[in-house]
Length: 235
Image (cartoon, rainbow, N blue to C red):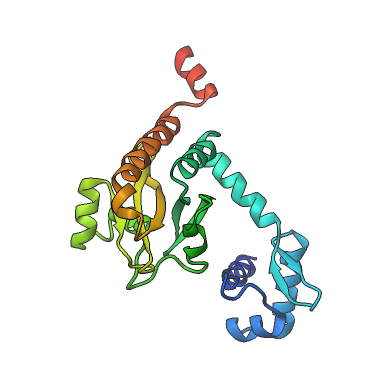
């Protein structure tokens, strides 16, 4: 059973913006398994809504993945995190992202578009790589224990602010700050993008607003839930 779960996870990992559609033959070749086994995995994942079958007999990520993503945000953060992100995006007219580290890669868990040209410039694929770490990735890595030898990350850990100065795209700039939980561990990073042209004019204001928003999110993470507060009072 455990092996089947691992293989199912490997199948889901294949679906990316660059390769959004897969069939049994291509999955079998990529994972080095029998085509019948690949077909069975794809069918099983589609039955529980994690995949959906296209008209061409191939598979894409299912709508259930969107629901699960929303559930993750609701369960980990307070209900006002999305309105706070939306306010930031509206004020600056720039996209805002909440990201976390999923194993060894960065995952966007919530986003708000700003309605500007920056929205169209954002990369559709991976935001991170060995030679082009985005601001949010730097922010999270700086607060992990395994990257402490990196000089740039040490400086980010001290300042609490990470920047993308064109690493992901020469046309883009970004700033990110950590979101820390009750144990002061960085569980996510909040970041905002803009264009290289706009950054000199609004970069400082974006950074201050981002820090303020992160502090509000952190306060809600550290506040005890209603049930916990009642138990503490009773004790």
